[in-house]
Length: 155
Image (tube, rainbow, N blue to C red; front, top):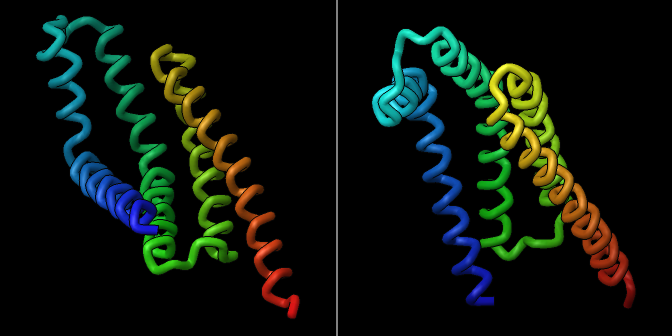
C-alpha cells in the first residue's frame, strides 16, 4: 500500500505540474512555438510553408487545450481518490471514462490539422491509442467496482 501511495503521489505531482505548464502555455504558446520552430532550429521565418506550419500547430493546440485541461483535472481527482483509499468506486470509473473521451477529443483536431502538418498525425495516433487503452482500463475498473459492490452485499 505504501508503494501505491508514493506512486500516486508522484503521479499527482506530475499532473499538477502539467496543469501549471498548460496554464502558462495558454498565454505563451504562440511565441514559444515560434521561438522553438524558427530560432532553435535556425529556419527562415519568411518561408510561407514554415509560417503555415506554425499557425497550424498553434491552432491545433488551442483547439485541444480545453480537453487537455479537463483530462488533467479529472486525473487529479482520480489520484486524490486513490490517495484517500477510495480506489474501486464509481466516480473513478467515470473519471477514466471522461479522460478517455478527452483523449479522443484531442485526436480529432490533431488528425484534422495533421492533414496540413504531418507531425501532428503522430500526436493524433498517440491520443487514439491512449484513449483506447483508457477505455480498456475503465472497463476493468468498472468490473472491479461491480465485483466489490457484490462482495460487500454478501454476508
